[in-house]
Image (cartoon, rainbow, N blue to C red; front, side, top):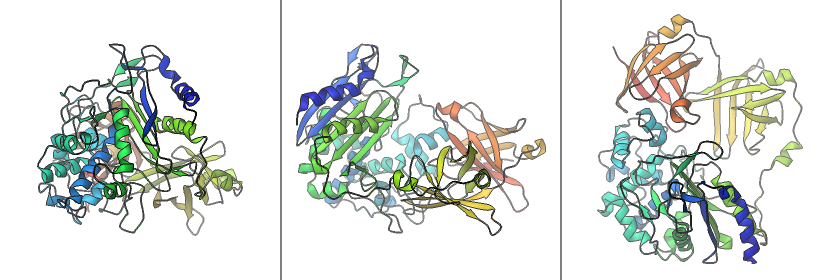
Length: 547
């Protein structure tokens, strides 16, 4: 392989970090047990004009999960635990859910546990700048009395799972999790710059500061007072991650049987295979140019990361950023493209569902046929509301354009493999919509939106208490909406969607688009007795109306 020309092409991908006073990125490309290219771009510290190098230490966010899963796999191989152990075998102070949650459920994010970050912490009024420890989030998880779903029924990514895995590792091994990983993983692999930050007061030599983007050329420091172990808070370098990556070929630490287990995907109760293995994403959904990819990324505070491995090619790419961004994976793929371009793709190609095949089968629908599908749809079990609109002759589902295959069946223009089916009643009225994905079908019933009167809004006003979060909300009526007042957070607006169901906009509180669904509950006499709050990864958190 002609490395030097490729290096120049790699450098061109990161030209944006040539700007003075900009944070940036460290990267490494590994091929056949060797780092064939490594580089740093931008500044590790804007305040001190310290440049990023391949030896700069970054927080890798959720990429940490693979180390936590590996620690559990080591303990299982030693016979100290079983993946089918109920979590209360090791965490006796957790609530006794029925059916029980197992370690295997935690590994594959199929436990049904509500997600602590950011949802539960946000609902419990933790600010970004508040110190957050493992004990803080464990208190929240111990307090939970409800699950998002029955263990094993669904896959829903939640940091809560890996917090409990780290705590199980501590109780089984008798060591602090950071020490266990240092002695059993980092030191044996020679990962000398790697550490688990179990105290935000810890000094980590060579650490890059994290930053947020405030517009062109403007940056501000991202506060990170989080020392939660398990799902995040591994600090490392691209050079150390190259050593970790090579262990997936040699099995030097743990052995090849554990390496194989690390890449084995989970299954749901109905036998459906998911694409989440042991802190790694695998399977048919993770192929690129015909090659199998094993990958994971992470975001935490002002850091972003992505690492992908092409096992058939013994080729890997890792990118670590010290500013928040959404498209870390895109950068990794752009780099991989340069090192894949001279390679022959596998003889056996995986057939992918592509848009061109669908476009040939699309139909033209009238404005009337489209408009009859417009409306609000609701799945009560998943506490999910979906909006269908029509703009300039195009139907949109949650703002994404749909392309018609027939009068009732559509696919997403940006994701052709996902279908949307509208289900009519006998009179032709649309009563339900289904999204059809590789992971299963999800149905939403059509609901009628209403415009509330002041008298109708007044009945919701009152004080509500959540024992699972130990927090109060005060609900007051406004002109055409409700307002939720809280102890630490600013008030938020609740907008009525349909009977007893409101949209709660937390965008101004969180700094990014965040909407909760608030559903008020009534007794048999129609009197409002409480409410339940649901978000992306929390469902049905209950508040009791106070006298």
